[in-house]
Length: 103
Image (tube, rainbow, N blue to C red):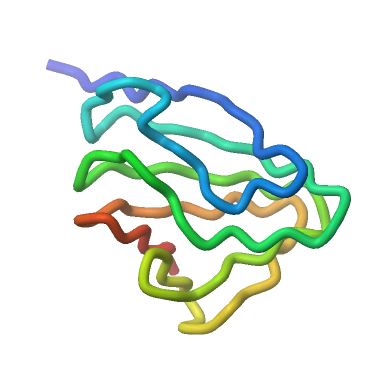
């Protein structure tokens, strides 16, 4: 039996700081989500809502204006707010309402 990894693509738009993953419906934990930033002004992303525990998702940063905001709902790899690097894909694991950034 083989596993097929599927991805759903979506974009972050100007000023989005909370993303509703649930808007994509009930997805199994192994169904990957890929988001892309496109911020033209400084934007902090600090919370995601509606994923299933164990689900992973990725964010491709395409701008120099996105910061991942460390806090109760988002744990960055550095343990503090982190300016995102353009061209880098950041991977997160969703666990009981908290998005944990991979190292």
